[in-house]
Length: 296
Image (cartoon, rainbow, N blue to C red):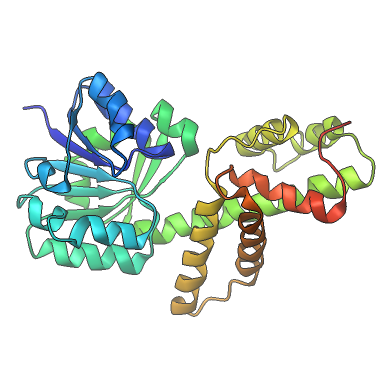
């Protein structure tokens, strides 16, 4: 039998993930608050749900929404997934949320016989489109393995991190490192440009260094073109640094660097860069230093 899959959240990441499920032949039903985003999926053969309750017959629902508030609304609001889904079904939640939120959802859904897997992803917009995401999964390992076909349709690797909440913990670690890298890259590039070093030279050195990576190569290319098309929204990274600092406080872990990066992202967001890629953080550093990255 072909699995019936529901998908909630057709944004930058969700759109690519849902497209891959459809391409792999799953019986897909999509739901999105903005109905306009569902039209392209309907044209490709997906069913469109007008309410979350219409996902009641799905074997698995994959969701990727903005924050813990949105996750809990989708699951617990009247007519949400907790009311709609049948015992034995599973929710794969790829949203970036606090571990506390993941544990709350898992505990409540378990009482109804519904499996909840916190399964955030890394790989950005391109990984979602190409089906090469990494899934970091917390929750019941048997439930994860039962639905590896669903994970494999959207990603190239699925890791079981531990019990409920552990996927969300490691996702915050992943984004913490990414945020630090972005701040360091922005500071370093602007520092070099203010010193009069051509951007082509800066880029060549960074991509020939011991810490060179596909991520740095991609970001230096797009920054060099003044291209800030959203791959990971700056506003979402700012939200994630909020989650990191909240969780760090509960764990009793000092995160001084994260706090600084959070403030810089907050400044960039206040300047209107929130809907751009997180690499637009460099614009704040340009303005402070009075220098442009691109060679004139």
